[in-house]
Image 1 (spheres, rainbow, N blue to C red):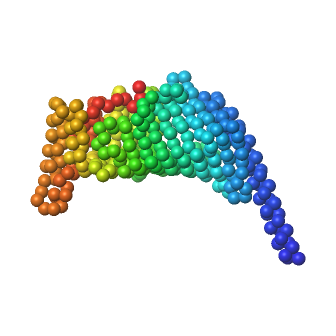
Image 2: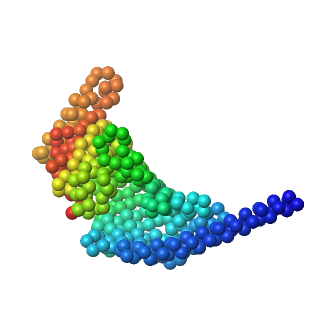
Image 3: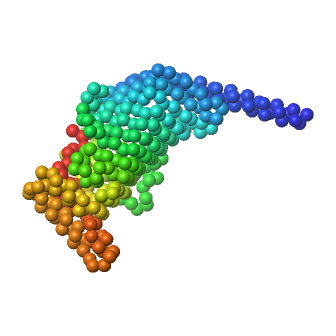
Length: 355
């Protein structure tokens, strides 16, 4: 008798779970369709060829083929994303946490024929956590292969073999504010790690042909996270918003650098900040830069001489340890007046972060 009761209870649990899974699958499909429709009023068009939900009994896989997302606005360039296949995975017992798999994607900012920026991403694995009740993003992590980017019709594109990106938004701004700290709350934390990076935006190649590894650890402070517009960025800056660069490191066989500091924007929306950097490979940098015409005459030639002098002075010494540091330079880097300074030397003119 007890065995029959136990078997009946197990059967009821199984049937109940089967009903629950299919009910949740139907609800997810319905709500996804409603959400897609709601985005049209926000200027976001979401189209796909097929939608299928599978994964019974352990998970729910929402599969989309030929996904196309386009965001338009009157005063901004359109943004489009195209992916041949995307799978969104959720778990019945933890519906606020999802996993994303993609065979790849292409992102365009501007027209698709001649975009201001195009981004190509290979296979991607991602996870995200969302507070469903508050409809608020909490954390997201991405691992992307074969990433490349470029602007316009440029043939040469920057690239990275693998990019890891982690984004976290504190649950409440107040919780991120340490006791007796005068800084504004942390709005977002961002950590990026990339390997085998080739950046065409730095044409002189001071890292050699590629950087073996790039790591960036940032914290955004402010009263409200800004959108990428003049008005929003100005309000963020005027309220005391800053970007805290906890660490930025670049390592390659020829040149290594690590720095930390803080930055914001000036009245022209150009970067404004101060950093402390430790650079190894000054001789390599000087050799590379000296091959460019801009550094073969004043003031370029004087800049290279000063960099070499500061490096040698910093590492001068007789014992082996000091000799090993001969090509290492502790350097103050500042962004001010629309210029990038290496120590006291202006070396690069900065542009506004948004026109």
